[in-house]
Length: 264
Image (cartoon, rainbow, N blue to C red; front, side, top):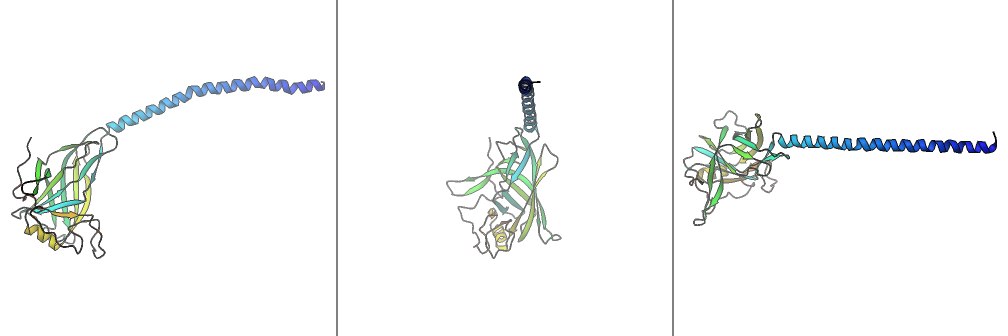
């Protein structure tokens, strides 16, 4: 074989390999063009199914406790009241509504497990709102509805003021551990929220001396280094603060004689 033929041999083989390479690349492109849209379609289907299930699934709910609650006793001193405005909201992207079928509250005073009145069961009595009287400058709690099931959706959380009452029980100084129980239609297991409050002797004296006066209890009072109570609890007033005295413009309608219910 001549030198010319040897030189032409590799070129010929390279030229023969060229079409094969081009044919292989074309085949890969055709295959990719088939399975890429298929994968995209399957991914879209999975996302659609997941979204459908998420939207249709039973909604979860959450409860956010307010910064302030109010305590009172009726004019005869036979029952105690707690007014609070928890936010009850639906979690997630579901479009389904949740039905809250009931609320309840239990309180237990620390260090008095065997003492009479150490524990109390508060029943949900009504829901409503505050309303002022422009002629007298006073305001009061107006009942809108009896304790009854209500709907909660993602766009419309519950923000009503809830009225809880415990018969034949009065507040005493001390720290209380409390549980708010929320029952719902879609789950037999109730949702529970644990919280606490600390009452001092002067706060209790105010409640008893002014039946119908709603004592404000907050959990966001400014910190006081001398206050050794649990900072996460609701408290009647900051440690060392003067006792709050009810004034004619801050005394709600007495709990013993509630205003007429809103109708319509």
